[in-house]
Image 1 (tube, rainbow, N blue to C red):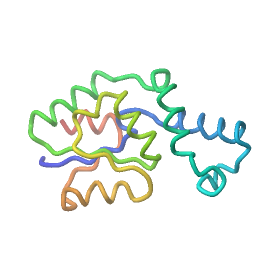
Image 2: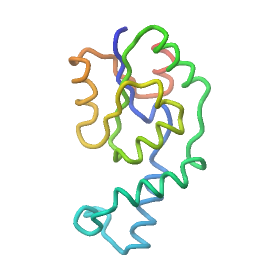
Image 3: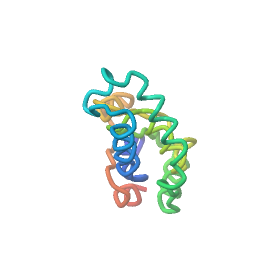
Image 4: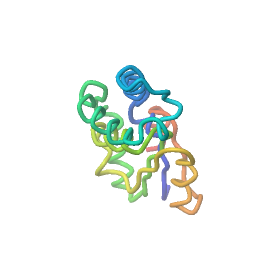
Length: 137
């Protein structure tokens, strides 16, 4: 296996922190969270600060996941992580989950999976769950 594209959810769940931020933004800034770019232009910076402050509560490293990433690296596999969540949250989550040093690229937002696969010329194993990640190594 030369390349692996891993969904961030296989490393850890970002949904609780993302939902917490959306709830907080809606309450604090009184905005429609479906229109953040229009109603809260600096929302990405606010999300990043929120995620940095709360990441230790939401993300815990998993020994099995860390070992699987290490095995992929030891075999010389190219590794990219993709996710639909915003890049600011994804980057912080990846760092707290122990993946930053073990992945070549992080693709976030709309079309992230396609961009991750394109990095490898479309020839990569796609991993979506923790169990698939453990099994692929």
